[in-house]
Image (cartoon, rainbow, N blue to C red; front, side):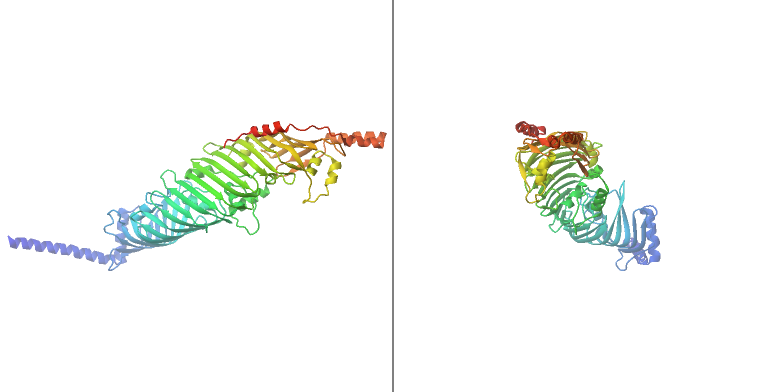
Length: 598
């Protein structure tokens, strides 16, 4: 009995030894490409996607779990000129990778419709399941979406995706990206320093599956802390957007449906043209300033146009990629058209609806405060705006040197349209401006009255020594209906004259149709009868000082002069019979024309 058992045990030993020897010989054979290549291609054909192949493949002796290959092709998914990988026999266990490391040169990886992240950070979860350490050189990552294909070139990537140091150098979307940091398996985190440089931040945001406005060329430095539920990006003060600095915190919640982005950002010095292009407004730039292609295209188009309102449109489909909020403060503003000294902007984004609970512009004198809701879920978009001026200098309203002092005002408007011009052409609502301390340039007042005698006496004044007259009141009410704003009317009342402006401005074609009449309160000689007409467009206004009444006045003067030379002067004498305007009611009407609740 013991002899039979010993014989059976001996046979089993020979069988096991034979199997081990065969396995060893197989492993040794696999170190040779002539054996390793057909076996690898058989395995790829049996377990890989259709058409997968490798030109050469073999294991490395004595590290028989290390596989080297050349010419790897997985059609539509992976291409690599050279690969090297170490198999992990316990890769099936939790928190382990199937490959201890993967090295690849001159290849490509195709990814379909990335959502910008997974439960373990920006694409790290699935990658960690496959490989721990990566050593990549010149590998293209091709991102395919329904509407576009974008490519990122990973110039070099080194380090562990699970736990340890990690570095990445990449380029794509007209941007370059550099990351130096570390990963943590325990918390599924990635943190370190990220530097991004590019032409337009909108491109790199789109590449990441997010949405951002157009910007000038940028150079951003961020410290990042990416965890499963939230990515925290701290924008360092060294960051430059155009000629402006930027700092603050951005958080991203990478949800499966729509990521939520919240930003709290500050610029200590803002160059106004850098912010203008964010809203599609081609503000001019000075010499030696940073400009990008978006700014240059917008400015070129604006210069070729005869319109004042830019032809800028909002692509609301970009808002589908993100929800969230943005708070932005510019502590100091330079190169602003209206001499804005600082500003604060708050935005909330939900779906295709953008709400601005606060738009605050601080001037050297006074402030402008506004609130808006832009509903891009409708087509065309619907916008509600309201706001107020508080003691803003007339110089900030482009009315210098004709008026000086402070102006108050309010407005309440609705528009329909995806672009600035379309929205302006559909504007409905009321705007009002008034002042209790306005001063009117005397030359302008006399000119509006066609008081040639008084105007001639003022023509020789220098810019630093102009004569102004105090206005008892100044009030303007502009009522818009389908883009046509009617003055009802504008009034400036001084001790010498009452100036009344009537007419309208049509924002659909920016045409001006205004008449200015000034009635004198004191007697004067050399006064013409009639109104001053202002026509043309907002971009190119024209002035017509003579009307049919003026021509008739000259005709009457000619007839009288033929009777007696002295009588020819009678039509040009202004008796000064105008009465004071009812300032109290005018100011009350302007203040109540478009009330704004804080």
